[in-house]
Length: 114
Image 1 (cartoon, rainbow, N blue to C red):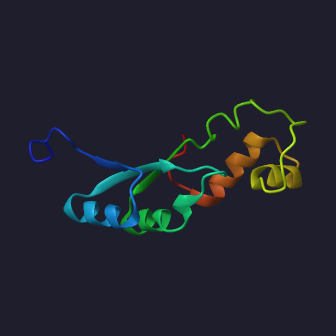
Image 2 (cartoon, rainbow, N blue to C red):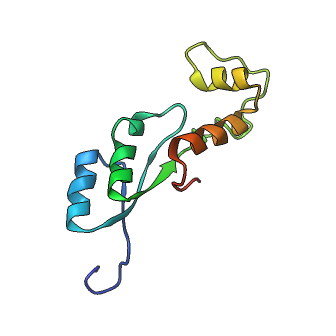
């Protein structure tokens, strides 16, 4: 389909760094979509650096952590000490959504934000 001109861009979803590199060697990958939020940080280990190295855009899936930042919780909600997002929001005296946008901007800069 690529050779026929019916597909212009190739993307991957939830791929490991080695898989990303192998796929990119065969056909340039435009974007990778993986779960990424303050609660799910697994992509930080090696996936984001692989995307940056290869010039692949990163699209975070579930950046609001399945409703965590959509108003489901209010300012009086209590969170345990192991919840880093609640701790950051409390320390910076921000709303959850503001903290998330600040954090995402710091982490992945120019990557796609949804």
